[in-house]
Image (cartoon, rainbow, N blue to C red; front, side, top):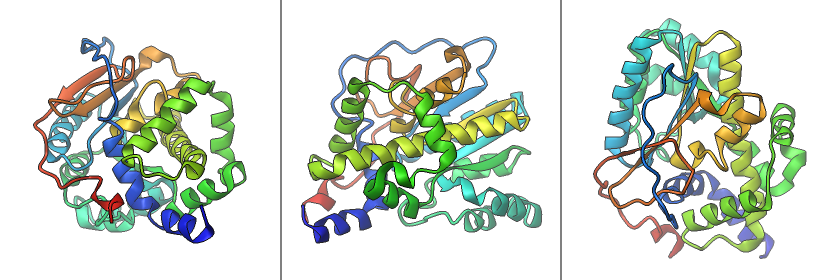
Length: 288
């Protein structure tokens, strides 16, 4: 792959990350485990997946958020949709403009176009209507691009320390690489796959670290809002939570899927279904 081609793919990374997180959640799955019954007591770390372009997923999770926060007001909600570097700005916007979702997403530097705002608005509305805190879980897109290009040298120190505590097998590496390739409709240049796996692992570690930090700061319950690919037990955020010492029983990984979506064996604790969203061909961007 020449330098120009690599640069073009790097420029597409924000859009590709969203496509990959959506499509990889549905592709190439085999057995579907039975939904787990509700745990008692409730786990401290709850991960709610999504297909990013399915509005029913967002509405259903918003209702679940309301119920979770009503039961445990000392809840922090971590969003994949903005960076952890924006937490202070978001907190200030909430103090200055209580209940104003526009002020909050502006402070979060929320990417309206790539996240197709207002699809996620029900989730933000559910949080802003309560005293729950909203934290960012992602890393800045410029740093994502650097990680794809430079690998370990571009990782934040706290995240690489967490990553290095997590066991990671050749099977996990291959699974994540396949998910990324499937999520990009088989069009990802093979030379870029190792860097893309690094970037996905960095995002997962960042979300796990945001959840751990919230719990350490006093949250009784931490809820992650992210794509299905980020909440998988075998290759995503739960790997890093457990590496930090969180017991498996304190994690509840929930996928939100569509009726014909198959599920990776052992990937989630529970699966919720919603009707298929109307969408254009997600692979069209790769056919141009």
